[in-house]
Length: 196
Image 1: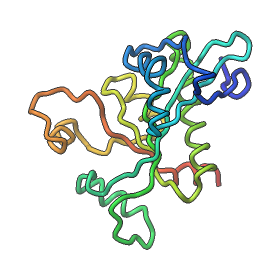
Image 2: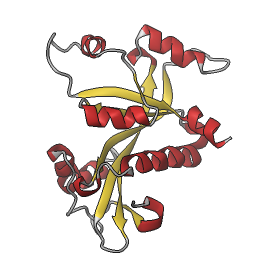
Image 3: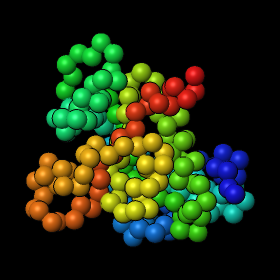
Image 4: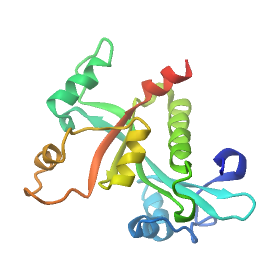
């Protein structure tokens, strides 16, 4: 099994260090990482990183992070109460500081080998140690398919909306229109408690 920290090196995307040879199971992600990520970064919309195998140079996984917030107005009643319950001495806030995982992909050749979980653990640790008290949540608009949702749920992400119907209604999508993504979050206090 590949250990990202032992067998790979982490790289920040740049015009001198682009992603050219990455293939995961999503054409949308492949197109983003290989063609759009630099433009996205140049517009200050998010920063992309990738892990490359030290031995062969093959890209194993890639991800993009952006500053964001978990907006109280985006939360349905039950989730709003659950989130506020976890905040001691909670004052009325319009939003909670968050980091958005804008894109995340694992090489098709290496998926199913725990790479996604390793990567999410790295992102949790990085966000917690680098941003400390400036960031409470990790957010993601997960692709609405069984494999993607299972990865995030396995790694303690929760859907913001309890059902697709509730999420569709909130975002005013026509009834019966399939949702391409599900809005999910991870509370970094869980990470802190695991380290304690």
